[in-house]
Length: 81
Image 1 (cartoon, rainbow, N blue to C red):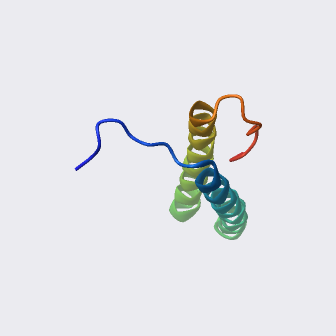
Image 2 (image 1 turned 60 degrees about the horizontal axis):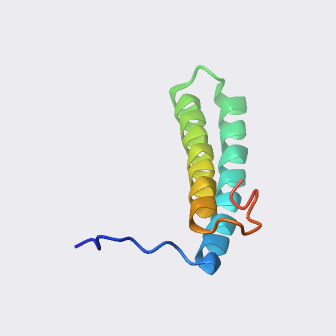
Image 3 (image 1 turned 90 degrees about the vertical axis):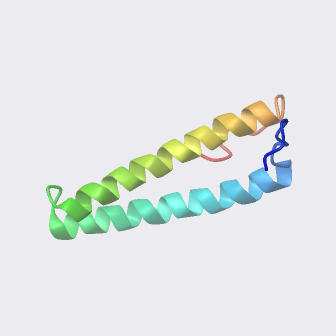
């Protein structure tokens, strides 16, 4: 059951999650580039990799906005991005 008032991630949790997501984002982009190079941009797998990479980028941006909302005034610019 969900609490009515959600508790935000702690600053330490945001820092850890940001580190993991940034690393995952970099690796996903590398793999995407490899698949597009090997199979071409019109390949279904390459297309899906590109969409997943775009979605990961959107997730990082959304988490950046959430961290800013959770900790206004803290120097968290580019934490997730």
